[in-house]
Length: 385
Ligand code: NAP
Image (tube, rainbow, N blue to C red; front, side, top):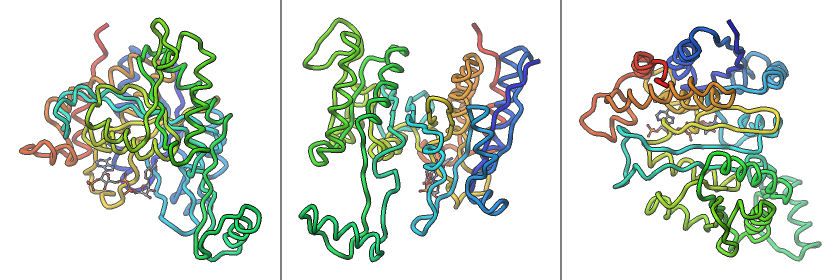
């Protein structure tokens, strides 16, 4: 029997509830879909607040080393207090492993609630650049010497006057960063037979960051010749590349979701869009995610630690479980991924849903997080090939 070793960061807040409901599903899915030839062994790792309490650091070296060695990990949500000197460990993980692609599939299936009239048209993959933009966290607090230095520099060297009581943030977006991200997404779209890639940007206002992002993505597409067409360069077949201004995109995705397929977003726009699109298929409890670099991939739900629900055995583990399915797909266990997805879909279709979906469906009694996990487990059968 082959053992697949998978690092896991259970996470803060509701992370424990979600992990308890999901663990056995993953283990059973691997066993059943490989006829007992493979099994998972978890490598439990600490990060965030739990790591700070145990080791005095948010991201212990052994966590980094274990992920580096395995090249994959699955993680639950980590809490980042707003303000103060506490940087996001989620962002830090993406930066140290150079996980420059964030992928968030948003696909409707029967049984999910949706505010849309025709939710079955929602089948969108949001790709978000993961290492640049305002998310780099380069900022200085109002009143500090650093903020004053930047304000003085802008005034005396650049002729720009801003209020002295400003906090300052920097929004770096590079040609190289945009190009490697765009190429990753184009290649994924071609390999997976997707029809359209839409660049989402606010280039009409932020010309040299978001506007440049748009230009650089089009530039990267040119090297693919006829395999990527645009409105100016129509070819035979291939992926069609177009672009939309971000505010318009928020409207379009609700009004005409069927027109959109793969979205290519800068970091912050992609962050906002991910949550907005999750609302089209039942909310954050349903939307999975993955972060890819050239060497490491980390799989995680779109949602955060939802601390008010911690320990209440209430939240929806679907997003985490589907993130696990993405991990299985990544390591080539396609049947396992399919079996997990099928079991989730059948469970929800049968009406076993947690509070978040039940309150939108109306007249449905919610099941606990743990109960939902047990229902999924019951539906888990090897896929019929
Ligand atoms: P959140 O934890 O995502 O929760 C926001 C709301 O989304 C919840 O109050 C709940 O809505 C719903 N929700 C989230 N997870 C759910 C689940 N599994 N099942 C059902 N509903 C779910 O966002 P937040 O409250 O803004 O952030 C809390 C902490 O998480 C912060 O420290 C933040 O920095 C962090 N965070 C971490 C990550 C990550 O680890 N990747 C991502 C985002 C945020 P209702 O209240 O309407 O039921």
